[in-house]
Image 1 (cartoon, rainbow, N blue to C red):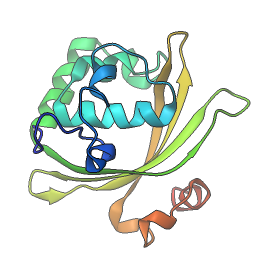
Image 2 (cartoon, rainbow, N blue to C red):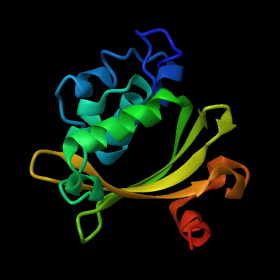
Image 3 (cartoon, rainbow, N blue to C red):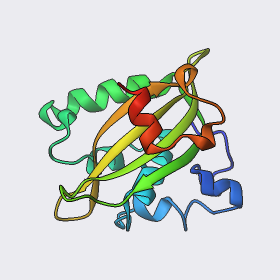
Image 4 (cartoon, rainbow, N blue to C red):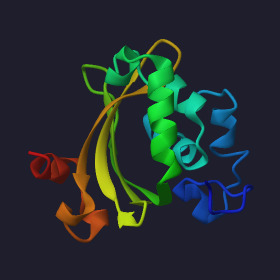
Length: 163
């Protein structure tokens, strides 16, 4: 699946020359990401690389996919990933955990699903599960509905778009 050389990380830190083994690879191998933004980057890299075990491990126990049988979740995601091509991740904004314990990360993914553009922005919520940060839920807005420039998109502006 990855288009880049295997030694370069797939998250946007790879553009700065970060090596996979020292960047997202260490989390895929079992280390816990220290914060929600790092978890988001490592999950993106796992999508690019098709690392289903990591994606499952980093889902919060309250995520809706955890209510499905693991084998069905895995099969559906593996099928979907075969036709997806991830091009770029950009972290646009982030907020530390609030009083409920949920942290937010706003990001944009440039990608294709088959031959069609499927880029989007997502506001993701992350919460701790006793072992580390986990992906709780997300809200998407398709690329075509996003303001320009993307770098000006904040969590506050995203909330208005997602309504």
